[in-house]
Image (cartoon, rainbow, N blue to C red; front, side):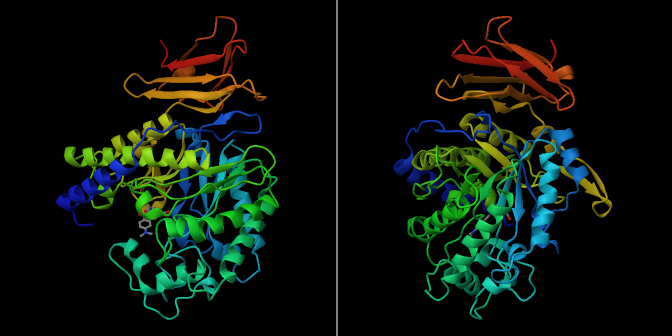
Length: 485
Ligand SMILES: CN(C)c1ccc(C(=O)NC[C@H]2N[C@H](CO)[C@@H](O)[C@@H]2O)cc1
Protein backbone atom coordinates (compact mmCIF):
# COMPACT_ATOMS: atom_id res chain seq x y z
CA UNK A 1 0.00 0.00 0.00
CA UNK A 2 1.42 3.48 -0.95
CA UNK A 3 2.52 5.64 1.95
CA UNK A 4 0.57 8.89 1.98
CA UNK A 5 1.65 10.58 5.22
CA UNK A 6 0.25 13.96 4.27
CA UNK A 7 -3.09 12.36 3.38
CA UNK A 8 -3.07 10.34 6.61
CA UNK A 9 -2.45 13.49 8.62
CA UNK A 10 -5.08 15.58 6.84
CA UNK A 11 -7.75 12.88 6.84
CA UNK A 12 -7.12 11.94 10.47
CA UNK A 13 -7.09 15.59 11.54
CA UNK A 14 -10.45 16.18 9.91
CA UNK A 15 -11.91 12.99 11.32
CA UNK A 16 -10.50 13.35 14.80
CA UNK A 17 -10.97 17.09 15.12
CA UNK A 18 -14.43 17.29 13.60
CA UNK A 19 -15.85 14.29 15.32
CA UNK A 20 -14.20 14.89 18.70
CA UNK A 21 -15.94 18.24 18.85
CA UNK A 22 -19.27 16.63 18.17
CA UNK A 23 -19.03 13.36 19.99
CA UNK A 24 -16.35 13.29 22.63
CA UNK A 25 -17.78 13.29 26.09
CA UNK A 26 -16.78 11.46 29.21
CA UNK A 27 -18.69 8.30 29.41
CA UNK A 28 -18.82 5.84 32.29
CA UNK A 29 -16.55 2.89 32.03
CA UNK A 30 -17.91 -0.24 30.47
CA UNK A 31 -21.34 -0.62 32.15
CA UNK A 32 -21.27 -4.40 32.37
CA UNK A 33 -19.18 -7.51 31.97
CA UNK A 34 -19.72 -10.90 30.40
CA UNK A 35 -20.20 -13.40 33.22
CA UNK A 36 -19.84 -17.16 33.42
CA UNK A 37 -22.30 -19.62 34.98
CA UNK A 38 -20.77 -18.88 38.38
CA UNK A 39 -21.46 -15.18 38.05
CA UNK A 40 -17.79 -14.33 37.63
CA UNK A 41 -16.75 -11.50 35.29
CA UNK A 42 -14.81 -12.89 32.33
CA UNK A 43 -11.85 -11.16 30.72
CA UNK A 44 -11.60 -12.73 27.27
CA UNK A 45 -8.13 -12.80 25.73
CA UNK A 46 -7.43 -14.63 22.50
CA UNK A 47 -7.33 -14.84 18.73
CA UNK A 48 -9.47 -14.90 15.63
CA UNK A 49 -9.14 -18.40 14.19
CA UNK A 50 -8.65 -18.10 11.48
CA UNK A 51 -8.27 -16.12 8.30
CA UNK A 52 -7.33 -19.36 6.54
CA UNK A 53 -10.92 -20.53 7.00
CA UNK A 54 -11.97 -18.19 4.18
CA UNK A 55 -10.07 -20.19 1.54
CA UNK A 56 -10.18 -23.69 3.04
CA UNK A 57 -12.15 -26.20 0.94
CA UNK A 58 -13.87 -27.40 4.13
CA UNK A 59 -14.18 -23.86 5.58
CA UNK A 60 -12.07 -24.93 8.55
CA UNK A 61 -9.09 -23.14 10.13
CA UNK A 62 -5.59 -24.50 9.62
CA UNK A 63 -5.24 -25.43 13.31
CA UNK A 64 -5.22 -28.94 14.74
CA UNK A 65 -5.78 -29.87 18.37
CA UNK A 66 -2.06 -29.71 19.13
CA UNK A 67 -2.05 -26.11 17.90
CA UNK A 68 -4.72 -25.25 20.46
CA UNK A 69 -2.59 -26.90 23.14
CA UNK A 70 0.47 -24.96 21.96
CA UNK A 71 -1.48 -21.70 21.97
CA UNK A 72 -2.49 -22.24 25.58
CA UNK A 73 0.96 -23.37 26.70
CA UNK A 74 2.65 -20.39 25.02
CA UNK A 75 0.13 -17.60 25.63
CA UNK A 76 -2.45 -18.74 28.19
CA UNK A 77 -5.35 -17.52 26.06
CA UNK A 78 -8.93 -18.30 27.12
CA UNK A 79 -10.91 -17.03 24.11
CA UNK A 80 -11.29 -17.76 20.42
CA UNK A 81 -13.38 -15.95 17.82
CA UNK A 82 -14.00 -18.95 15.58
CA UNK A 83 -14.87 -18.15 11.95
CA UNK A 84 -17.96 -19.80 10.45
CA UNK A 85 -19.05 -19.64 6.81
CA UNK A 86 -22.73 -19.40 5.87
CA UNK A 87 -21.81 -21.00 2.54
CA UNK A 88 -20.64 -24.16 4.36
CA UNK A 89 -23.50 -24.15 6.86
CA UNK A 90 -26.30 -23.80 4.26
CA UNK A 91 -24.96 -24.98 0.89
CA UNK A 92 -28.50 -25.01 -0.51
CA UNK A 93 -31.59 -23.11 0.67
CA UNK A 94 -32.85 -24.61 3.96
CA UNK A 95 -30.41 -27.51 3.65
CA UNK A 96 -27.88 -27.47 6.52
CA UNK A 97 -24.62 -29.40 6.30
CA UNK A 98 -24.50 -31.34 9.58
CA UNK A 99 -21.05 -32.71 8.72
CA UNK A 100 -19.80 -29.14 8.68
CA UNK A 101 -21.35 -28.47 12.08
CA UNK A 102 -19.83 -31.73 13.36
CA UNK A 103 -16.41 -30.48 12.24
CA UNK A 104 -17.04 -27.16 13.99
CA UNK A 105 -18.16 -29.01 17.13
CA UNK A 106 -14.97 -31.11 17.08
CA UNK A 107 -12.83 -27.98 17.08
CA UNK A 108 -15.00 -26.40 19.75
CA UNK A 109 -14.24 -29.46 21.89
CA UNK A 110 -10.48 -28.89 21.47
CA UNK A 111 -10.98 -25.45 23.03
CA UNK A 112 -13.51 -26.66 25.59
CA UNK A 113 -11.03 -29.25 26.89
CA UNK A 114 -8.70 -26.35 27.70
CA UNK A 115 -11.30 -24.07 29.31
CA UNK A 116 -11.49 -21.66 26.36
CA UNK A 117 -14.60 -19.60 25.64
CA UNK A 118 -15.63 -19.95 22.00
CA UNK A 119 -17.35 -17.17 20.05
CA UNK A 120 -18.93 -18.41 16.80
CA UNK A 121 -18.48 -15.68 14.17
CA UNK A 122 -20.65 -15.74 11.03
CA UNK A 123 -17.84 -14.33 9.00
CA UNK A 124 -18.06 -12.51 5.70
CA UNK A 125 -15.80 -10.27 3.71
CA UNK A 126 -17.06 -8.81 0.42
CA UNK A 127 -20.30 -10.82 0.72
CA UNK A 128 -19.21 -14.20 -0.60
CA UNK A 129 -16.92 -16.22 -2.84
CA UNK A 130 -19.20 -16.11 -5.87
CA UNK A 131 -19.11 -12.35 -6.37
CA UNK A 132 -16.36 -13.25 -8.84
CA UNK A 133 -16.17 -16.22 -11.19
CA UNK A 134 -12.75 -17.19 -9.79
CA UNK A 135 -14.16 -17.31 -6.23
CA UNK A 136 -10.93 -15.94 -4.73
CA UNK A 137 -12.04 -12.56 -3.39
CA UNK A 138 -15.03 -12.77 -1.07
CA UNK A 139 -16.11 -15.22 1.60
CA UNK A 140 -19.21 -15.90 3.66
CA UNK A 141 -22.48 -16.04 1.73
CA UNK A 142 -23.36 -19.09 -0.40
CA UNK A 143 -23.65 -18.79 -4.22
CA UNK A 144 -27.43 -19.29 -4.13
CA UNK A 145 -27.70 -16.18 -1.90
CA UNK A 146 -25.47 -14.07 -4.14
CA UNK A 147 -27.24 -11.92 -6.73
CA UNK A 148 -24.85 -9.57 -8.53
CA UNK A 149 -27.38 -9.23 -11.36
CA UNK A 150 -24.42 -9.61 -13.73
CA UNK A 151 -22.93 -6.31 -12.62
CA UNK A 152 -19.12 -6.20 -12.73
CA UNK A 153 -16.85 -7.04 -9.81
CA UNK A 154 -13.24 -6.22 -10.67
CA UNK A 155 -10.45 -7.34 -8.38
CA UNK A 156 -8.54 -4.43 -6.83
CA UNK A 157 -5.00 -3.94 -5.56
CA UNK A 158 -6.57 -2.82 -2.27
CA UNK A 159 -9.03 -5.61 -1.49
CA UNK A 160 -11.37 -3.29 0.48
CA UNK A 161 -12.24 -1.39 -2.71
CA UNK A 162 -14.07 -4.46 -4.03
CA UNK A 163 -16.85 -3.51 -1.58
CA UNK A 164 -17.55 -0.59 -3.97
CA UNK A 165 -17.78 -2.74 -7.09
CA UNK A 166 -21.29 -2.66 -8.66
CA UNK A 167 -21.83 -6.41 -8.30
CA UNK A 168 -20.77 -6.40 -4.67
CA UNK A 169 -22.97 -3.43 -3.87
CA UNK A 170 -25.92 -5.14 -5.56
CA UNK A 171 -25.38 -8.36 -3.62
CA UNK A 172 -25.59 -6.46 -0.35
CA UNK A 173 -28.52 -4.36 -1.53
CA UNK A 174 -30.49 -7.54 -2.23
CA UNK A 175 -29.63 -8.98 1.19
CA UNK A 176 -30.67 -5.83 3.08
CA UNK A 177 -33.82 -5.74 0.87
CA UNK A 178 -32.88 -2.27 -0.33
CA UNK A 179 -33.89 -3.53 -3.79
CA UNK A 180 -37.09 -5.14 -2.48
CA UNK A 181 -36.40 -8.13 -4.75
CA UNK A 182 -34.96 -10.78 -2.39
CA UNK A 183 -36.52 -10.54 1.09
CA UNK A 184 -35.96 -14.29 1.40
CA UNK A 185 -32.20 -13.84 1.85
CA UNK A 186 -32.40 -12.31 5.31
CA UNK A 187 -35.03 -14.94 6.22
CA UNK A 188 -32.53 -17.69 5.41
CA UNK A 189 -29.73 -15.98 7.35
CA UNK A 190 -31.92 -15.63 10.43
CA UNK A 191 -33.00 -19.29 10.25
CA UNK A 192 -29.39 -20.35 9.80
CA UNK A 193 -28.49 -18.67 13.08
CA UNK A 194 -31.42 -20.40 14.76
CA UNK A 195 -30.05 -23.72 13.51
CA UNK A 196 -26.55 -22.98 14.83
CA UNK A 197 -27.99 -21.99 18.21
CA UNK A 198 -30.00 -25.23 18.38
CA UNK A 199 -26.77 -27.13 17.77
CA UNK A 200 -24.62 -25.37 20.39
CA UNK A 201 -27.15 -24.25 23.00
CA UNK A 202 -25.99 -26.97 25.39
CA UNK A 203 -22.26 -26.50 24.77
CA UNK A 204 -21.06 -24.44 27.76
CA UNK A 205 -17.77 -23.52 26.09
CA UNK A 206 -19.66 -21.63 23.37
CA UNK A 207 -19.88 -18.23 25.04
CA UNK A 208 -21.85 -16.67 22.19
CA UNK A 209 -22.63 -15.83 18.62
CA UNK A 210 -21.24 -12.92 16.55
CA UNK A 211 -24.11 -12.22 14.19
CA UNK A 212 -22.23 -10.76 11.19
CA UNK A 213 -18.62 -9.84 10.62
CA UNK A 214 -17.99 -6.24 9.59
CA UNK A 215 -21.44 -5.47 8.11
CA UNK A 216 -21.55 -3.38 4.91
CA UNK A 217 -24.76 -1.61 3.94
CA UNK A 218 -24.18 -1.43 0.18
CA UNK A 219 -25.88 1.72 -1.05
CA UNK A 220 -27.28 2.25 2.48
CA UNK A 221 -24.70 3.70 4.85
CA UNK A 222 -24.39 5.16 8.34
CA UNK A 223 -27.40 5.60 10.65
CA UNK A 224 -29.87 4.76 7.86
CA UNK A 225 -28.16 1.37 7.60
CA UNK A 226 -27.34 0.70 11.24
CA UNK A 227 -30.73 1.82 12.58
CA UNK A 228 -32.55 0.33 9.59
CA UNK A 229 -31.88 -3.10 8.08
CA UNK A 230 -28.85 -3.89 10.25
CA UNK A 231 -30.83 -3.44 13.46
CA UNK A 232 -33.71 -5.40 11.88
CA UNK A 233 -31.35 -8.29 11.08
CA UNK A 234 -30.00 -8.25 14.61
CA UNK A 235 -33.45 -8.19 16.21
CA UNK A 236 -34.61 -11.10 14.08
CA UNK A 237 -31.43 -13.11 14.77
CA UNK A 238 -31.72 -12.44 18.50
CA UNK A 239 -35.28 -13.81 18.47
CA UNK A 240 -34.26 -16.85 16.41
CA UNK A 241 -31.32 -17.60 18.71
CA UNK A 242 -33.34 -17.09 21.89
CA UNK A 243 -35.87 -19.59 20.58
CA UNK A 244 -33.14 -22.20 21.02
CA UNK A 245 -30.61 -20.74 23.44
CA UNK A 246 -31.60 -18.60 26.41
CA UNK A 247 -28.18 -18.08 27.93
CA UNK A 248 -25.42 -17.55 25.36
CA UNK A 249 -24.26 -14.02 24.72
CA UNK A 250 -25.17 -12.38 21.41
CA UNK A 251 -22.45 -10.20 19.89
CA UNK A 252 -23.39 -7.34 17.55
CA UNK A 253 -21.03 -5.31 15.41
CA UNK A 254 -21.43 -1.80 13.99
CA UNK A 255 -20.90 -1.16 10.29
CA UNK A 256 -17.17 -1.57 9.75
CA UNK A 257 -16.47 1.51 7.71
CA UNK A 258 -15.81 4.47 9.91
CA UNK A 259 -16.16 2.69 13.24
CA UNK A 260 -13.03 0.58 12.60
CA UNK A 261 -11.24 3.93 12.47
CA UNK A 262 -12.85 5.28 15.64
CA UNK A 263 -15.90 7.13 14.30
CA UNK A 264 -19.17 6.71 16.20
CA UNK A 265 -21.73 4.03 15.50
CA UNK A 266 -25.47 4.76 15.36
CA UNK A 267 -26.40 1.22 16.35
CA UNK A 268 -29.54 1.43 18.51
CA UNK A 269 -30.28 -0.40 21.74
CA UNK A 270 -31.31 -3.99 21.02
CA UNK A 271 -33.71 -5.71 23.40
CA UNK A 272 -32.92 -9.21 24.62
CA UNK A 273 -36.13 -11.19 25.27
CA UNK A 274 -34.36 -13.65 27.60
CA UNK A 275 -35.54 -13.96 31.21
CA UNK A 276 -33.10 -12.08 33.39
CA UNK A 277 -30.36 -9.61 32.52
CA UNK A 278 -29.84 -8.96 28.80
CA UNK A 279 -26.88 -10.71 27.22
CA UNK A 280 -26.04 -8.50 24.26
CA UNK A 281 -22.35 -7.69 23.67
CA UNK A 282 -21.03 -4.79 21.61
CA UNK A 283 -18.17 -6.13 19.48
CA UNK A 284 -16.44 -3.48 17.35
CA UNK A 285 -13.11 -3.82 15.58
CA UNK A 286 -10.26 -1.33 15.48
CA UNK A 287 -8.00 -0.56 12.51
CA UNK A 288 -6.84 3.08 12.79
CA UNK A 289 -7.10 4.98 9.53
CA UNK A 290 -3.43 6.12 9.49
CA UNK A 291 -2.44 2.44 9.55
CA UNK A 292 -4.92 1.61 6.79
CA UNK A 293 -3.14 4.35 4.83
CA UNK A 294 0.22 2.70 5.37
CA UNK A 295 1.53 4.56 8.41
CA UNK A 296 3.30 2.63 11.15
CA UNK A 297 3.35 2.92 14.91
CA UNK A 298 7.12 3.19 14.69
CA UNK A 299 7.01 6.69 13.22
CA UNK A 300 6.58 9.35 15.94
CA UNK A 301 4.22 11.57 13.95
CA UNK A 302 2.09 8.64 12.82
CA UNK A 303 2.11 7.16 16.32
CA UNK A 304 0.57 10.39 17.60
CA UNK A 305 -2.19 10.20 14.99
CA UNK A 306 -2.77 6.53 15.70
CA UNK A 307 -2.96 7.15 19.44
CA UNK A 308 -5.52 9.89 18.85
CA UNK A 309 -7.50 7.49 16.68
CA UNK A 310 -7.39 4.89 19.45
CA UNK A 311 -8.58 7.47 22.00
CA UNK A 312 -11.41 8.51 19.67
CA UNK A 313 -12.32 4.87 19.13
CA UNK A 314 -12.46 4.25 22.87
CA UNK A 315 -14.65 7.29 23.55
CA UNK A 316 -17.13 6.35 20.84
CA UNK A 317 -17.15 2.63 21.67
CA UNK A 318 -17.95 3.38 25.29
CA UNK A 319 -20.74 5.76 24.28
CA UNK A 320 -22.28 3.06 22.07
CA UNK A 321 -21.81 0.36 24.72
CA UNK A 322 -23.59 2.62 27.21
CA UNK A 323 -26.47 3.07 24.77
CA UNK A 324 -26.68 -0.66 24.20
CA UNK A 325 -26.21 -1.39 27.94
CA UNK A 326 -23.67 -3.94 26.79
CA UNK A 327 -20.18 -5.11 27.71
CA UNK A 328 -17.51 -4.65 25.05
CA UNK A 329 -15.39 -7.22 23.28
CA UNK A 330 -12.84 -5.92 20.80
CA UNK A 331 -13.54 -8.47 18.08
CA UNK A 332 -10.53 -7.66 15.94
CA UNK A 333 -7.30 -5.75 16.21
CA UNK A 334 -4.07 -6.59 14.45
CA UNK A 335 -1.35 -5.58 12.03
CA UNK A 336 1.70 -6.76 10.17
CA UNK A 337 3.88 -7.87 13.09
CA UNK A 338 7.02 -6.97 11.10
CA UNK A 339 6.03 -3.29 10.78
CA UNK A 340 7.96 -0.75 12.91
CA UNK A 341 6.46 -0.37 16.39
CA UNK A 342 4.06 -3.29 15.86
CA UNK A 343 4.52 -4.82 19.30
CA UNK A 344 4.12 -1.45 21.01
CA UNK A 345 0.84 -1.02 19.15
CA UNK A 346 -0.40 -4.39 20.38
CA UNK A 347 0.70 -3.53 23.94
CA UNK A 348 -1.26 -0.27 23.65
CA UNK A 349 -4.45 -2.04 22.61
CA UNK A 350 -4.09 -4.65 25.33
CA UNK A 351 -3.72 -1.78 27.79
CA UNK A 352 -6.76 0.06 26.40
CA UNK A 353 -8.93 -3.08 26.49
CA UNK A 354 -7.79 -3.74 30.07
CA UNK A 355 -8.74 -0.18 31.04
CA UNK A 356 -12.14 -0.58 29.35
CA UNK A 357 -12.78 -3.96 30.97
CA UNK A 358 -13.17 -5.24 27.42
CA UNK A 359 -12.36 -8.66 26.01
CA UNK A 360 -10.18 -8.86 22.92
CA UNK A 361 -9.41 -11.16 20.01
CA UNK A 362 -6.32 -10.48 17.93
CA UNK A 363 -6.63 -10.70 14.15
CA UNK A 364 -5.49 -13.35 13.61
CA UNK A 365 -4.12 -16.82 14.37
CA UNK A 366 -2.63 -17.39 10.93
CA UNK A 367 0.67 -18.14 9.23
CA UNK A 368 0.74 -14.81 7.40
CA UNK A 369 2.99 -12.25 9.08
CA UNK A 370 0.12 -10.82 11.15
CA UNK A 371 -0.17 -13.87 13.37
CA UNK A 372 1.90 -15.01 16.36
CA UNK A 373 3.98 -17.55 14.46
CA UNK A 374 7.21 -17.59 12.52
CA UNK A 375 6.95 -20.27 9.88
CA UNK A 376 8.91 -21.88 7.12
CA UNK A 377 9.06 -24.93 4.91
CA UNK A 378 5.55 -24.29 3.60
CA UNK A 379 4.09 -23.94 7.07
CA UNK A 380 5.60 -27.21 8.28
CA UNK A 381 8.08 -25.45 10.58
CA UNK A 382 6.23 -23.21 13.04
CA UNK A 383 7.85 -21.38 15.94
CA UNK A 384 6.77 -18.58 18.29
CA UNK A 385 7.03 -15.11 16.74
CA UNK A 386 7.38 -11.73 18.45
CA UNK A 387 3.65 -11.53 19.17
CA UNK A 388 3.74 -14.59 21.43
CA UNK A 389 5.70 -12.82 24.17
CA UNK A 390 3.41 -9.77 24.01
CA UNK A 391 0.23 -11.83 24.18
CA UNK A 392 1.68 -14.09 26.88
CA UNK A 393 0.94 -11.72 29.74
CA UNK A 394 -0.69 -12.24 33.12
CA UNK A 395 -4.40 -11.43 33.14
CA UNK A 396 -7.46 -12.29 35.18
CA UNK A 397 -9.38 -15.00 33.30
CA UNK A 398 -12.34 -14.77 35.69
CA UNK A 399 -13.01 -12.29 38.49
CA UNK A 400 -15.26 -13.31 41.42
CA UNK A 401 -16.88 -9.90 41.72
CA UNK A 402 -17.35 -6.60 39.88
CA UNK A 403 -14.05 -5.61 38.26
CA UNK A 404 -12.83 -2.14 39.19
CA UNK A 405 -9.45 -2.07 37.45
CA UNK A 406 -7.01 -4.35 35.65
CA UNK A 407 -3.54 -2.86 35.18
CA UNK A 408 -0.44 -4.53 33.80
CA UNK A 409 2.89 -2.74 34.04
CA UNK A 410 5.14 -4.39 31.47
CA UNK A 411 8.21 -2.59 32.84
CA UNK A 412 7.88 -4.07 36.32
CA UNK A 413 5.84 -7.10 35.15
CA UNK A 414 3.29 -6.22 37.84
CA UNK A 415 -0.38 -7.14 37.44
CA UNK A 416 -2.93 -5.41 39.67
CA UNK A 417 -6.53 -6.62 39.77
CA UNK A 418 -9.10 -4.68 41.79
CA UNK A 419 -12.69 -5.80 42.23
CA UNK A 420 -15.69 -5.37 44.51
CA UNK A 421 -18.00 -7.90 46.08
CA UNK A 422 -21.30 -8.26 44.20
CA UNK A 423 -23.79 -8.21 47.03
CA UNK A 424 -26.83 -8.49 44.78
CA UNK A 425 -25.78 -11.66 43.03
CA UNK A 426 -24.47 -15.09 43.88
CA UNK A 427 -20.92 -15.34 42.74
CA UNK A 428 -19.20 -18.64 43.31
CA UNK A 429 -15.76 -19.95 42.52
CA UNK A 430 -12.34 -18.36 42.81
CA UNK A 431 -10.84 -15.43 40.95
CA UNK A 432 -8.60 -17.07 38.34
CA UNK A 433 -5.46 -15.31 37.16
CA UNK A 434 -3.28 -16.70 34.36
CA UNK A 435 0.42 -16.09 35.00
CA UNK A 436 3.09 -17.19 32.51
CA UNK A 437 5.47 -19.54 34.31
CA UNK A 438 8.51 -18.49 32.27
CA UNK A 439 8.70 -14.99 33.77
CA UNK A 440 6.87 -15.85 37.00
CA UNK A 441 8.33 -19.16 38.21
CA UNK A 442 5.86 -20.85 40.52
CA UNK A 443 3.36 -18.13 39.61
CA UNK A 444 5.51 -15.37 41.07
CA UNK A 445 4.50 -13.54 44.23
CA UNK A 446 0.83 -12.79 44.91
CA UNK A 447 -0.53 -10.45 47.57
CA UNK A 448 -4.00 -9.24 48.55
CA UNK A 449 -5.45 -6.22 50.31
CA UNK A 450 -7.47 -8.70 52.37
CA UNK A 451 -6.25 -9.36 55.92
CA UNK A 452 -3.66 -12.11 56.29
CA UNK A 453 -5.39 -15.44 56.82
CA UNK A 454 -8.68 -14.19 55.40
CA UNK A 455 -7.86 -15.01 51.81
CA UNK A 456 -6.21 -17.98 50.03
CA UNK A 457 -4.30 -18.43 46.78
CA UNK A 458 -3.64 -21.84 45.20
CA UNK A 459 -1.17 -22.11 42.29
CA UNK A 460 -2.38 -24.55 39.61
CA UNK A 461 0.90 -25.33 37.86
CA UNK A 462 -0.84 -27.46 35.20
CA UNK A 463 -2.95 -24.51 34.02
CA UNK A 464 -0.46 -21.82 35.13
CA UNK A 465 -3.33 -20.16 37.04
CA UNK A 466 -3.70 -18.66 40.52
CA UNK A 467 -7.04 -19.54 42.11
CA UNK A 468 -7.84 -16.90 44.73
CA UNK A 469 -10.61 -17.02 47.34
CA UNK A 470 -11.11 -13.56 48.82
CA UNK A 471 -12.53 -12.41 52.15
CA UNK A 472 -16.31 -11.94 51.58
CA UNK A 473 -16.45 -9.57 54.53
CA UNK A 474 -14.37 -7.03 52.62
CA UNK A 475 -16.20 -4.90 50.07
CA UNK A 476 -13.19 -4.41 47.81
CA UNK A 477 -10.14 -6.49 47.03
CA UNK A 478 -6.85 -5.73 45.31
CA UNK A 479 -4.59 -8.54 44.12
CA UNK A 480 -1.02 -7.82 43.03
CA UNK A 481 1.18 -10.28 41.20
CA UNK A 482 4.89 -9.75 40.59
CA UNK A 483 7.78 -11.98 39.54
CA UNK A 484 9.18 -13.93 42.52
CA UNK A 485 10.66 -11.55 45.07
C1 LIG B 1 -15.12 -0.91 2.83
N1 LIG B 1 -15.32 -1.87 3.89
C2 LIG B 1 -16.66 -2.33 4.11
C3 LIG B 1 -14.28 -2.36 4.63
C4 LIG B 1 -13.01 -1.81 4.49
C5 LIG B 1 -11.94 -2.30 5.26
C6 LIG B 1 -12.16 -3.34 6.14
C7 LIG B 1 -11.01 -3.85 6.94
O1 LIG B 1 -9.90 -3.40 6.78
N2 LIG B 1 -11.25 -4.82 7.86
C8 LIG B 1 -10.16 -5.20 8.75
C9 LIG B 1 -9.90 -6.65 8.82
N3 LIG B 1 -11.12 -7.39 9.08
C10 LIG B 1 -11.18 -8.50 8.15
C11 LIG B 1 -11.73 -9.75 8.74
O2 LIG B 1 -12.93 -9.45 9.40
C12 LIG B 1 -9.78 -8.66 7.63
O3 LIG B 1 -9.77 -9.36 6.43
C13 LIG B 1 -9.37 -7.24 7.55
O4 LIG B 1 -7.98 -7.12 7.49
C14 LIG B 1 -13.41 -3.90 6.30
C15 LIG B 1 -14.49 -3.40 5.54
